Image (cartoon, rainbow, N blue to C red; front, side, top):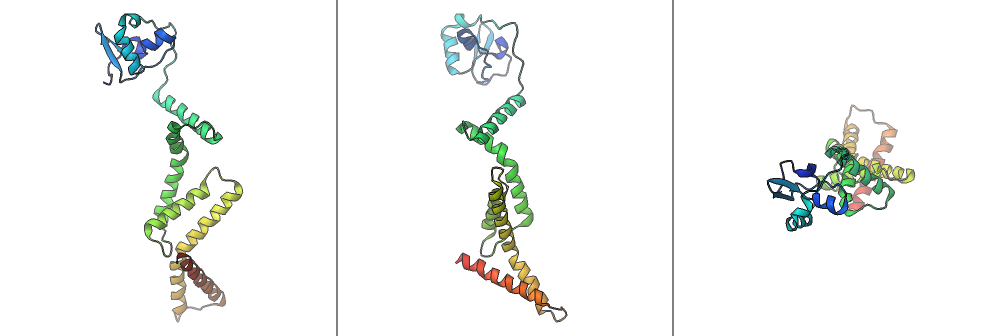
Length: 210
C-alpha cells in the first residue's frame, strides 16, 4: 500500500537506523501502523522485521542534525549526470542506467532527425516512404553521432548528402526534362552535361536496387 501521510522519523526507515545507524529514506509502499503511529520502511524485509520485533525499532531516534532534503529534481539530475559520465567513459554503465543514458544522450538528437525527415519527406528511388524515412533518420544519426571521429563524421556526412541527392533525383530530372522539351528555353551544353550526369546517376541508383 502506498503511504500518503507523514510517517514517524521524518519518513526514514527505523529498522535501517537501528541496525546500521544510517538514515535511509523509506519507500512509500512499505507502511506499518503501530500504536496509532505510522512507520515507513526501506523495503519489505525491513517492514517484516519491525512487525516481528516492534519494541526494538519503535523508539529509534533521529540525530539532531539531519541531512539536507534533496528534491526529486536534484536526485534525477544527479542520476542523469552519473549515467552520462559512465556512458562517456564506457565503463560501469549498468543495465538499469542504460535507459537514462540513452534518453539523455540520444533523445534530442533523435527528435532533430525526426523533424528533418518530416520536413524533407524523403523518397529514395526504388524505396517506399517508410523505408526512405528510416534511411534518412539512420544517416542523420550516424552523421551527428557525438562520439564520431572527425574523419568518420565527414564520411557519414558525405553519405547523408549522397542519400539526399538521390532523393532529389526524380524531381531534378523532371525539371530538366521539362526545360529541354520546352521550345522557348535556351538549352546549353553545360545543361546537357548535367542532364547526362543525372541520367547516369539515376540508372546507377536503380541498378543498385536490383
